[in-house]
Length: 162
Image 1 (cartoon, rainbow, N blue to C red):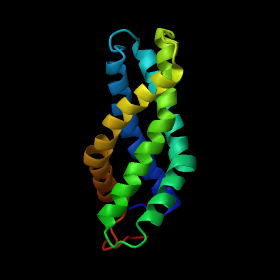
Image 2: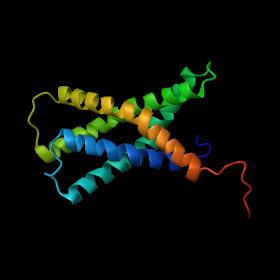
Image 3: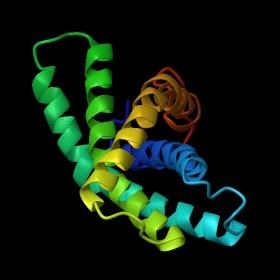
Image 4: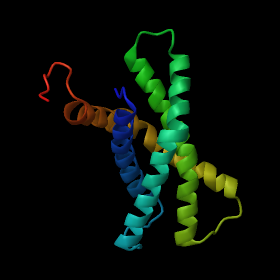
């Protein structure tokens, strides 16, 4: 897919936007926040989550997921297996970090009502992972790859005029 740093940034921006948008709405629904928070609060939370997600994607989770996926799939010729492995590692890494953000956001909006923060984190992580993995593999991954190849990445067969 992306072959240059610029293409990686473009791909990451599109993917993070879609995943953060859907996962934000999912978490608002799970926490009963839809209708309780203002539009401004929702947009602010989304923008903060998007900025955190793109930083994680470009500098921490993305590079490490790519290294692990390429290492594990070095002996296979299946591009699909490599993409699925990379996507799975991305979801694991992003869910681990973004669940912290989700838990903190929930506590800020609703207050802290539990006595077991680790249990709460594991619950948030589990719910996010269960939603994010199929979303990434079946919806966002194919959709973003289609958008990227159709509109962002130039076709090698096309002749560009200078």
